[in-house]
Length: 132
Image (cartoon, rainbow, N blue to C red; front, top):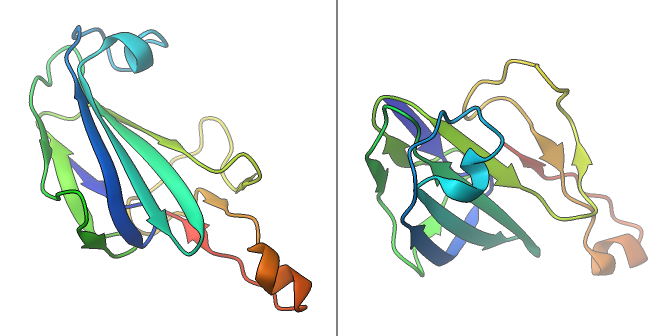
């Protein structure tokens, strides 16, 4: 099974289930065509979207949270039985911290850094919140 974790701390704002095909999860078309759950989380002035994408064998997506639920960074939020794929979509200004082909580990690898919030940047404060 493939355990899914929250990439940021925040509040679940949207969950959209989309019926679809069961192509090989590593195929580029699977991100658009396969059965999936699209989750939006808002936290610390940033929004992160992730997609739980079912694959050729994995045909069961589980998501434990509801809209309005709070989640912690790295908290288990669901799974895709028999493994599959999860895409994480960061803010357009995010600095990506991983390279293509790099192995990452759930709840410990930093995928990227969100841009500093305007009010903190204006006051000279610096923050770097990593998405995991």
